[in-house]
Length: 334
Image (cartoon, rainbow, N blue to C red; front, side, top):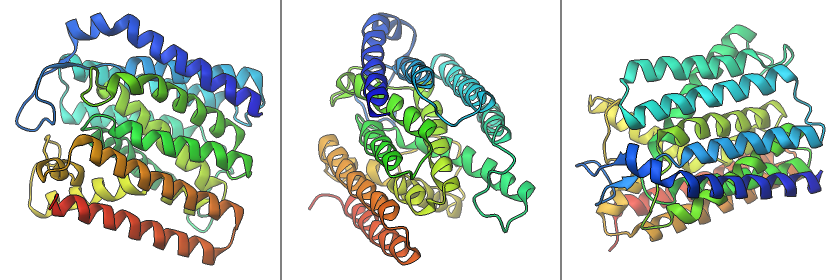
């Protein structure tokens, strides 16, 4: 299995970097992100690198599926692939021409619903909950996860600082039987694709992901967490994306309380406040990366020591680490 994962990682990374190098002139011509009052960049910058990341991820994942047994049915593979492509196309249209909030949300619900509908009949996270109700909750949670990943992709290397530790954590959980082989393959494919993209997005970025990348990446990360939860590893599914979950969810709640239009762009996420508070982009993403590595380590502990008390302790510790980081960002640099 590890040989297959190495091949998938290398292929995805090479494809992602190669496609970006080939497509950068087109990105600069058709998909420029121009600064506005809510932006974190100061000069027009090409976006659309997510096209290469998504393509490399899917090709790498399909290659892995041909080289090893993934435990996923053809229906699950096709549903996840089609949903990923659908969100990538939606993001591409939004990057180039703009798309209203309602059509975006509807398409996201269709994509997430397609993935959920493909789950095996015996798939369940909480067996005590009626299946239709659980699937409805998964749909709502999936749409939120897609959006929160999109919301958090607001500064250079932020998505890199999130995706690398999360996907590496899922890969390592695969060696402890904490996640299905298919999830490990997809995690490694996404890891390789993001590594190929990272040099172009290094601060100050020469290229952004764009919605064409952040939306499908949100779907893939959400699906990976779903696979962990379905493997009786709910603690790991909470811990790995905990920083993104906390920053985006608390920010959304604050905006709802203030009766703001939550579908409009803004600059009130904790990491955005940190840039306004004196932190450099590098200082922010390094802190996020370090916290995410710590969260991945805690997630591995829950798989190595499957005990409810360990789950509670690791989630509490992970929550404390994330709370410290959020408060640090909110205070600003003294």
